[in-house]
Length: 153
Ligand SMILES: [Zn+2]
Ligand SMILES: [Zn+2]
Image (cartoon, helix red, strand yellow):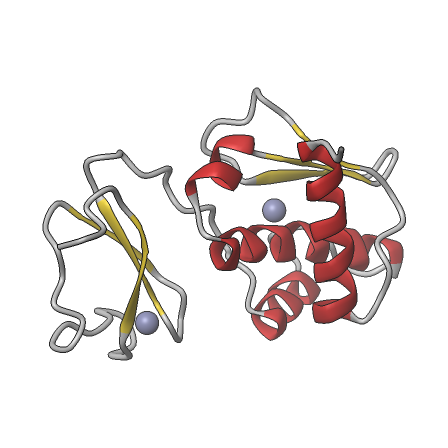
């Protein structure tokens, strides 16, 4: 039987290979103390922490973008480049792989969550959005349904 931490590590290794073409060779685990943070990179021993509530709450597509964000820190640090949020290297690589700049807010279960298919902006709404009519407020591209309790509307 594989534990949830094993599944997380497998996902991080997979995203690293697919989106960065480089192996992830350290530890990744859930940290129950993270609240609004999606994950955290530790330069001391190169391990990554991830927010278990976000893993449970978001689709794999959204969580993958959280993993991408942490892997941008990881791979830039290992390459001796600017790995902090303010560094140009960080901004460039994060944009290239399409990772999230900020972790999305954990959804209140009474909200429906949508995400822009292009710029990945997350929208939370009390009411169902008509996906045929509604477009992203930032870039004008279509949205997709991500999460919510009223699935069969
Ligand atoms: Zn970060
Ligand atoms: Zn957009």
